[in-house]
Amino acid sequence: MNTVEQDRINTKDSAIDQANPRSGASLVPMLVAGVVLTFGGMIAALVFTSVT
Image (cartoon, rainbow, N blue to C red; front, side, top):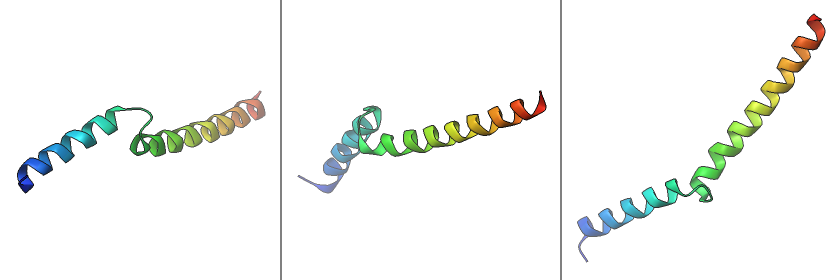
């Protein structure tokens, strides 16, 4: 197999992996987003409870 065809296969495989929600490439951003949203919600709750 030549390198151009191998690159096309690798690109196709990585696109499939990124579309798969259980692939490692998409788990890390979901984990970071979950942690950020969780702490953001905690801070917002503290702000709203101290205002009232």
